[in-house]
Length: 96
Ligand code: HBI
Image (cartoon, rainbow, N blue to C red; front, side, top):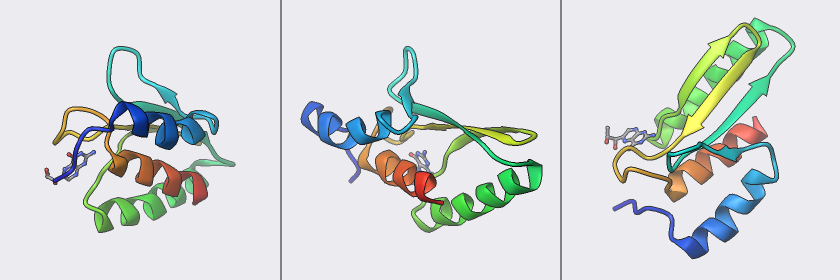
């Protein structure tokens, strides 16, 4: 069963993400990052790669694509906040 990130886990798991362009969403236990690409097709290709990982892990982003940017918000609906799944997907997104 997925659980909300503990305070300790937040320090170890979230810190590297917050140092890499992710930030906490105001008033919500979630993280957000805007990715910018060369053009729309690069943005959409990245979304496609990310979507395959989201589907494989059964953990899906909230995202908004405008032209060459993709704003990604991650939180775990099942626990009402951040879990290790969000950190895992964030790390994967940063690597794609
Ligand atoms: N994606 N972000 C996110 N959070 C969830 O809780 C979640 C999900 N994708 C699928 C999923 N949960 C399934 O386990 C069902 O709860 C829909």
